[in-house]
Amino acid sequence: MTTATTPGRFRLFGSTLRLLWNPLRALTELPAHGDIVAIGVGRWRAFVVCEPELLKQVLVDDRTYDKGGLIAERFSVLLGNGVATCSHVDHRRQRRLVQPAFHKDLLRGYTEMMPEQVTTVIETWRDGEVVDVMAAMYAITTRISCATMFATELPAHRITQVTRDLDIFLSGVYRRIILPSLLDGLPTPGRRRFDEAVARMRNLGAAIVTGSPTTDPGVILSVLKAECDENGDGPSETELVDQVMNFLAATVDTVGATLTWALHLLTEHPDIAERLHRETDTVLAGRTPTAADLPALELTRRVITETLRLYPPAWALTRVARTGTELGGYHIPVGATLLCSPYLMHHRADIYPDPERFDPDRNYDRRALHALFPFGAGARKCLGDSFALAEATLTLATIASKWRFEAVSDDPVRAAPRFVLAPRALRLRAVAR
Image (cartoon, rainbow, N blue to C red; front, side):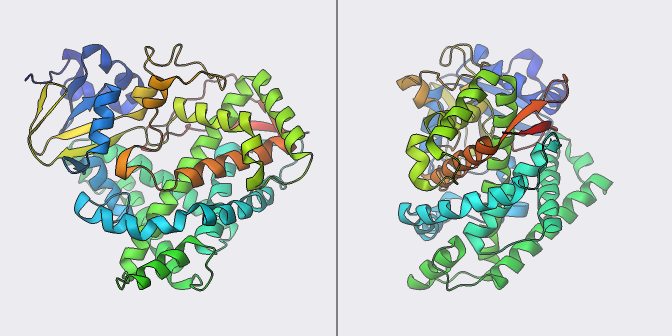
């Protein structure tokens, strides 16, 4: 049995700066040093799993490699002990309670609500207007989340605040993990903004829980309450708020970021955008899409899949070894943190030739599919993966049927240092079709 070693240039302070300012490149360089690479980031140590089979083993064996680590701990400040953040001992019960809300029969009902929310946002655009794409996509996903999950409609200013608060939280979580503990504890303006954003989001969750109707079987919160009552294990308000925060974080920011990246990529590849427009014209013929159109929107779906490969929203996950164990010939001590990065896997050139190229026609062979982890794997795989894929596909089809986009700047679009992978900013010119 061997012990994973740390490459010289990935030590302590140098690693901190590298992972703070260019984490994606730093991660993609690690496989050259082994299947499992130990890194030191400020006060944090982790074993980075660089081989697909080993990564899947870690994600599937959630008893040995439990949810936890500094990332999970930081996320729990907002998400509480919800289904995405709880440890193995609580996860099975929570998943049983939440899973019925994502049954395929209910999913069809949710998808029927989605295009209306998209149309409400995009019909405010004007031909030739420069659109803040991130803000627009997050407005769409917030509206869809509130309509499908809580039968709630937020006013425009609250939607804007949700977007800002999620960005403050996700950026702040990343900084609080990377920076030394002494700096993390200082009462800085950034720390105050972080705490205020968390408080506003939790208060919004409480308002949703207490204010949403509980008799509508077509929304997720109602299904969750009914399921809990049926099992004689009714949740407290805090537990329901935890789940609401988990749902919002898992849909608003992740799907919003994916759509933002997709529109950016289509702008950079006008030939693919033209094919997408032809598909939506043929399939939809000017009408609003429905769930029944999803099988025919093949290219639209492949655009979303390839976007998720290039820019997986959850680009880094952590697990904690509950026992001392062996992984791929390496000794993993009890209590060790393992870093699992879908981004790292999705950019391995030996699995995805020319990995930086956007190619919706890419041939995903068996090994490539096996290394594709945008929603995780195993029992902790995202419960709402089908919901998210349907939402992203229908939203992109609705937009593409009415609008095309043009770049307004030659500046490169870069990822922001935060824990859902999103651009720092994206402004595009909307052109009516």
